[in-house]
Image (cartoon, rainbow, N blue to C red):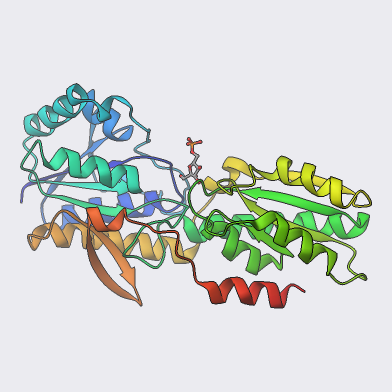
Length: 322
Ligand code: F6P
């Protein structure tokens, strides 16, 4: 193996830079050259490449975002885009490709592998944690810490004013950010896409809630069937006109910020092992960490996140936040 290509794709996530650094430095240690493509698959289509050195990944382990930049390429979904991307990989004569991203990134990697005979390995990079084959994706730990930091602050003002806050967090298809940050922040309720008929249950729960509570936090995942935090507030207002209610949408702040220590370490392990995997002839797989062990999950399995949720966690949250 003489030359590797590397890109980040899809939504950025804190820890991607730590992973980039690990891929580049592990490869260079093995005398493998690394070419980075900027803006994900879009950069591959337009041949937007840069040579990566020890120096180019210096001082980035602590930085959020991705120095390689990223995008959600529509063109890559077309036959023409895919062919251009394959041509450029061929032109650079690379012996392997490492992609860092989420389900869209791995779906793209599968499509690309039908066009060109270059081994591809993936590292899971998404704040949503919605991939099969890893306990934590790169970005998830930092994002949930960002959420609980924000909710703690909201709790201060909610408590002072005796208010109910509906806080919307990211998670288009998965409620994992809402669930973990809900437990971590002591939220009174969470609404997530994995559970149905959330609103009637929420109303019952609020009716039965302790009367001496002065503040309440309800966390809503953006993909919940209720239609989002404003919609939930509107419905609740009908049943509880006495509530002094406010809505807070945390939005893209959840994707930014300096990665947590756990994130940096996991991302480094994944980046390091992505290169090792290619050297060992493993490809078409996503590197993960399950029970502290490095795992290799075929792309088509990694993207099959189901709506199954740890029911015990939900039950526990409800008991603890009474
Ligand atoms: O990266 C995943 C995610 O944060 C989802 O939770 C969210 O729905 C989506 O990205 C928003 O992405 P964008 O604003 O970049 O389209």
